[in-house]
Image (cartoon, rainbow, N blue to C red; front, side, top):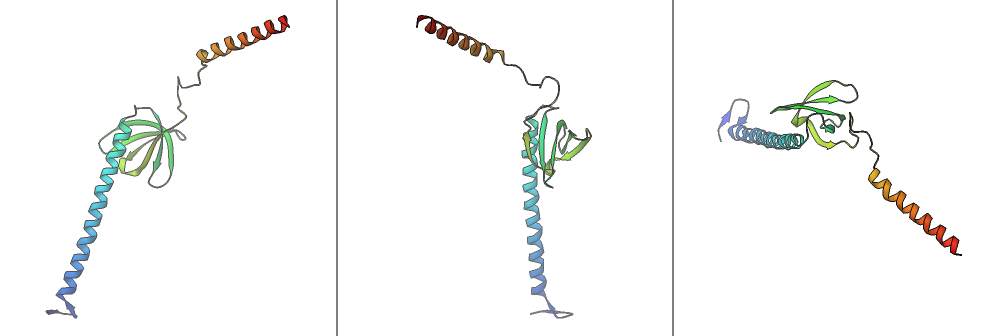
Length: 138
């Protein structure tokens, strides 16, 4: 065995080199995982039109509600509903995207469903008329 100054052998240096290369390979694999996740978030956001009200869950475990802005290859803009400020986020910063259940803006107010009301009123009138006929014959 070859000895280096300070009682360090070549085997120990080789072992240290292998360990360091293993750590860098592990980081490279996790970086490719982040790239895959970022592409997944990009594809999910691309399904929504600009201005769509969304719920973002960030990797830092905070939530953001707001409107989707412009998409770019590495990031996207988002208008926060609480502060009405525009921020740019990287796709890798987002853990999950959900379509918010409460859309905002013009044209999203609850509508009256007349098509449901008409059959209900007609049915109630028919039951009332049948009850009146039954009471008159009795």
